[in-house]
Amino acid sequence: MQYMYCIMEYLYYICNMENIKIKLARVEKGLSQQDLADLVGATRQTIGLIEKGRYNPSLNLCINIAKTLDRTLNDLFWYEDKKK
Amino acid sequence: MDERNKQIAYKVIAVMYFLTIIAMQGIVLYRQFALGQEMSDFEDIAIIMTINSLFLISALLYFGAIQVRRLNIKSILLIYVVFVVLGALFTYAKYNIFQSSGLSIEQLFDKLIIIITIIGLILGFWILLSFLGKKRLDKELE
Image (cartoon, rainbow over the protein chains, first blue to last red):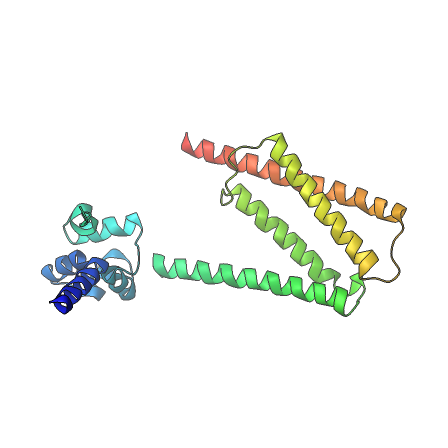
């Protein structure tokens, strides 16, 4: 039971690190990372790193991504504090 | 080249610049104190480094990278005194510790006058630039 709890905690940690919302919105739109990168004027690596949660994009890039994916900034980048 | 590439490039350039300055400083000190070379032998490196460092700090002050909240006389005087003391100590060490010939008190005093003047000019220049930079930012915010 304790192992299960650890695994779940790890998965929760991974999910928190990654920006799943962008990935889902992109896939829903039928775009690859390269397509999205071309549309927002970034490189595929940058999009990949944003999705992995390893790069904090500028506000301009966030807005471009949100507009391209027909979402709001809140939809893609806002996270509620899960500890509450 | 997107914003992430630019950020990485700026970081790498900044680190390499810093390392170059440190390496040049090391070379100057080595040639001056370890090899005992004359000032004229490495004057070019010293001049490049001095101008480079002065302009770096000036640009940082002007563009607001170094935040100067308030320019009060007390802190300016404190910085001035610290710089003068450091300069005087360095000069004393250079002539009377690392060089066997040494300088008399009068000669050291002459050097001290030069140090006080140069540091005063540099500090005045930096204060002027930080003031102009602040004014430029205020103008942009209007």
